[in-house]
Amino acid sequence: MPLDGATLSGVVHELERALIGGRVDKISQPEPDEIVLSIRSGGANYKLLLTANASAPRVHFTAQSKASPLTAPLFCMVLRKHLSGGRVLAIQQPEFERIVALAIESRNEMGDMTRKNLLIEIMGKHSNIILTDGNDKVLDAIKHVPPSLSAVRTILPGAKYVAPPCRGKSNPLAATLTPLPDTTETIQGSLFARYNGVSPLLAGEICALAQVHPDTPLSHVTPEEMKKLTEAFSALFARVRAGDFSPRIYYDETGKGVDIAPWPFLSYAHLRAEPYGSASEMLENFYLRRDAAYRLKQKTTDLRKVLSTLLERHQKKALTHEKSLADTQNRDRLRIMGELLTAYLHKIERGAESFAAENFYESNATVEIPLEPTLTPAENAQRYFRQYNKQKRAHIALEGQIAQNTADIAYLESVRTALDTASGEEDMAEIRTELAQQGFIKKIPHKKTKQRPSKPLHYTSSDGFDIYVGKNNTQNDQLTLRTAHTTDLWFHTKDIPGSHVILITRGAEPPEGTIREAANLAAYHSRGRASSNVPVDYTPRKNVRKPAGAKPGYVIYDHHKTLYITPVEPVSPINL
Image (cartoon, rainbow, N blue to C red; front, top):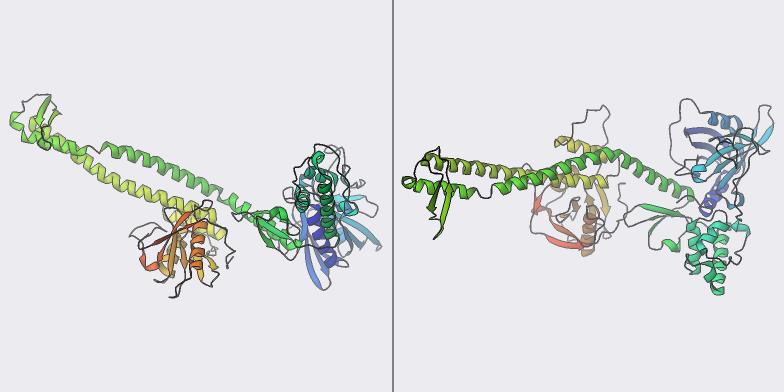
């Protein structure tokens, strides 16, 4: 979700504690819509990120380092001119809006102390970073807004800075919840429309605290419900005023980060929460993961297309094989007709177009055998034997081709599953290399810089047992065939593409809980992740074998047991 007033207030409290009195050391503009201020304060160095990116506008401390352009953009040069060496006087969130204003005192060209304001407006596609002087005159902005683009606000050097229109909204920190208008509008919609910085999520949380459904029409709100809403509204914003924040990221059942909140939300009680010590840390992690997932998805697009094309081609080939195999099913009838003709050669007239022979392979049966009149009876018999042998050879060849094609489909499906669970550049590189080695894509030109090899995922069970999960077929082979000891337990989803999972036993008998945790990892890191009652086979490693010439990741096994698992997201692995 975009930053709402409450979460932004948590950031402002954090910035106030750390930066007031601090000095601006460096200013960079690594992206066209992004500024980083390096500030020295209280004996510590801080990097403050301000980004007006339309998809993720925000402000917070950052630990990330980005390369800056060799030539600083004009806006960056303006900021350096007016703010370098300046001291942070104040940090405010005007009217609980999604705006943060930094007041910075610095010397001008004449050596006089002057006050400048650096504002970041977090407004979706209208987000902006604006520098004004002490008289609210715009000195520059990261995005210029001429009158031709907006009749409401002009943001150009020399123009008077005007705050974004509030559309009649109030500051909830300076207000109490008054009786809501008697209309068909919902409670949630009304709270969102009446107060600055109140997002639909925050409005829904007020309703959850009051135990009133957010979609209740205002005309149906009872006096008792209104009292509860007023109390919930006051309690929530008292928490904001007190600076009582406990930020967290919420994740859905697939492990995707779906939202952020300034403290535990009743609305998200059904989701897994990951708490953070500060709003900046929470925002940094949330957007880093989201951006990393987006970049990885973009980079896997071409490989996904290749896999889809390969799978489609092999599936069409399977249909062709199936039809061709059906054409050879009656080959034994050709052999029988050849044998019958041989047995009755003395009875067949030359030039006959057919011959009715008693079929001694079936009792009381007569078979009408078509003949080629230009051939002798013996040549007709040989013709049927040739047709039989041809179909026999075709049948044998088709069985081999079908087996190979089936193995290729299973392999490509396993690669697609590995692609779904890839978490970084090194995983992608290994998958590409593996496909090239198997001849499915062209070999990648050798690069001078070596890609750091990825490692299997490493988890620890609640009983302290190490569990490893292969992220691709190469790792699966390595784990199962070379890393695992014969007494370790091997897990894999039954007839479903997925990772090999190894439970390290060191000769001990693992508890049932640990076995189920390992089975859950196998189910979660498989194509059955979103399913329920996923069958997971497990057996000691000594019962797992790789057939000669089999593709990476393919093994056979016996003496196994099966668990049925509804996958749940595991805790984060150790080595990520």
